[in-house]
Length: 231
Ligand code: C5P
Image (tube, rainbow, N blue to C red; front, side):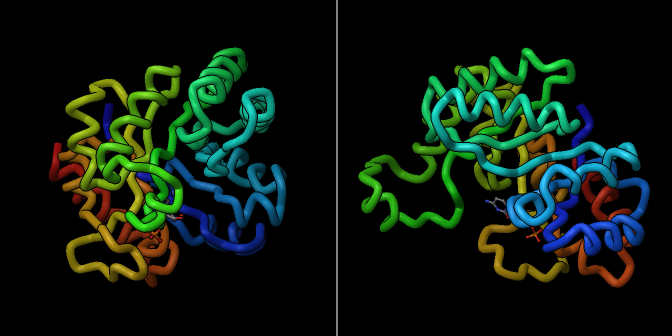
């Protein structure tokens, strides 16, 4: 499968999103809608994307009792969402309920699990009573999610290689992507598009480098070119 680029629509309101869509090149097939924009606008925010035949990655990181998450997956699918996130820490029953709900949809969305928030430190692990290392936790929760029927994992490029060796079929969705000469911003562990693809990432999530570019078409073309270097 050819790796895909997903552009993160990290804007606060639908008008800003429409402005962005008008500026960004048609070559972008996938867009990510996150909590801020979805909470501001609700499912109506997905309509301009559907009108443009774009694929939608709804990043709400669901984590609740199995029935509630299953209902949320079905409702999101009915709005035309192609991929969405759940928290692996929700446990096997929740993950299985989400996967079953997705399978029952007319157009089943792909589900990818967040194993560990990258904002968590080892001190947070102590507070939470987690005794595994960060990478062991990612592998253990990855195993849990995938064996529960979830399609893939959200991972940094730096952990993608280990996950790919262990889980040959999983989708691996990777944020923290920067071109070699790009501004890192607040991201701590960035990687180039080529590195992420080499490590086995199937979907690369890019926000500010494209959203804030003076020439988004040129930056997008450079990112696609860099991804192809790895194939
Ligand atoms: O602007 P930038 O390319 O850093 O945006 C990356 C996107 O991926 C943002 O929407 C951010 O919330 C998301 N993300 C991330 N790191 C994670 C999970 C999600 O950067 N661990």
